[in-house]
Structure formats: C-alpha cells, structure tokens
Image (cartoon, rainbow, N blue to C red; front, side, top):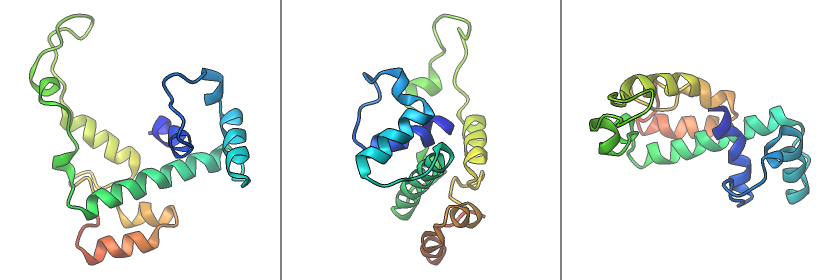
Length: 141
C-alpha cells in the first residue's frame, strides 16, 4: 500500500518507474520533483502519500461504479492453480483470499466486498464520491 501510494505521484507525472534512478524515489527528491513539475507546493512527503492514497481510492471508486467488486480483484489463473516450481516457496500455490483480506484492511476498504468505505473516502476528503457510491448501493460497510 505504501509503495502504491508513493508511486502514484510518478504515474501522474507520466514517468516510468522501471528505468528511473532509485534516488528519485527518495521522499525528499520525489516531493521536489512533483512540486517543480506542477508549480504547486504540495507540502512534504506525508502529504504526497495522502494524495497518492486519494488517487488509489478514486481509481477504485471508478471501477466500483462500473460494477467491479472483490470478484474482479484476482490474479492470473496460473498463479492460483500451478504450484511454484522452485525456490523457498516451491510447491506452494498463491492463496488469494487471505492476501485480499489483508490488502483491503490496509486500504480501509470493506473486507467482505472489496468496496471502499464511507469512513475511508471521507478521511480523504472524498465525501462526494462516497455519496455517489452510496446512491448506487456500491459503498462498503
């Protein structure tokens, strides 16, 4: 969750995170790049993380509005059925449900449905989105 929130900034600036230098991903450098690129002082790194969290929740809300729910948060079938062939985890198969539960809990979303909650959206100043999802019956409990 931390890395998703952190890297959401870079995605908004349309930079590719694969070939970029690792020092660009340090909190102080990342914040300076965003402030310089936009001409807006977004504050420090903690505020940057909060904005990244807002981005992820808006994206989730968009998908929820379009009908997505927990069933759609999955991995390729191969990961769920084929045992890992070698290494320390050899023979294991991904158990997706516990991972989803932990992820939704870390995000502040409803664990049973995968839908964002009013509490989380309002914490991020996204009350209008919470209201719209509630009207559609698509808000987590």
